Length: 115
Image (cartoon, rainbow, N blue to C red):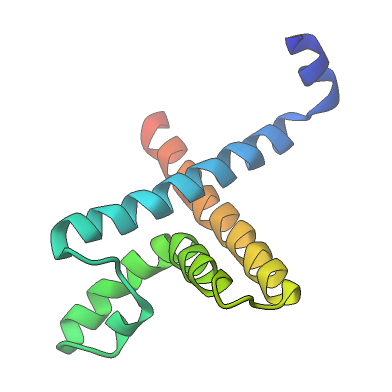
């Protein structure tokens, strides 16, 4: 079974799939950790409220938790019947964002563990 997977999938595609999964997991972890601390999920309004230092501190949190927030907002809007194009666009954004943030995390872990 594993030989078939190795024959079909290259190491780059497996690494990309792993980075995508890590990106989704870290997005949920960041949002859930903030909810544990603040009793509510983070939102993009964090960039508009509070002192300037708190706004700057919210940027990394929002960068890594954005895929979770976008999908949560899309699922909430699903009750109001959004158009299929918006759902597909949000899904594409979430997938690409998770892939990029997961790639950053995997690269950082590889750099830390190789030292």
